[in-house]
Amino acid sequence: MPDIATLAVFCAATLALLVVPGPAVLFIVTRSVAQGRSAGLVSVLGVHAGSLVHVAAAALGVSALLAASATAFTVVKYAGVAYLVWLGLRKLLHRKAGEEGGAAPAIARHSRRRMFWEGFVVNVLNPKTAIFFLAFLPQFTDRHAGPIGPQILLLGALWIALGLLSDGAYALTSSALAGRIGRSARARRRLDVGTGVVYLGLAAVLTGEKA
Image (tube, rainbow, N blue to C red):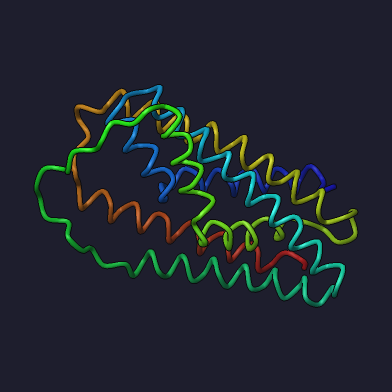
């Protein structure tokens, strides 16, 4: 299993990534604003039920790579760093489109069950999420500390626990401020820049880690 220092770094890196809004957070905020706190929290549960699928897939996939070749595993780790760099640059260079003013479109109201499964599908069917888990979780594993699969499952469980807390906070905050949330191109651009800096910083730190 990863040592305490590695788990601490992983938790810090995970929180840094989770606090920057992505597609899942936008889905949760949208539902929270449209239908209130309970709708947002149900959406959070659906999203992270989907995360379980990606964690299991990453554990099985990386374990298979390691069983086939330690070199292949190292390649995956460095490919993960490259992917983080790409994500960071993409966010920093992203240009605003269609951000002029205007009222936000109305959002249909759905049942709690439907919102749960929508959150699940949003996360499971997002190929970027699958690639991200495959790229991110192996960076904190150690081939010499035991089987890789259980290490990834442990890291994935930590990710999901922190994600429930972070996304739950988004749901509670956005539902409380629903009447004051508007469309802000400047705020979205700042979030893009913040996301890009986090991705690039994390990639720089992981480049110095042993494979």
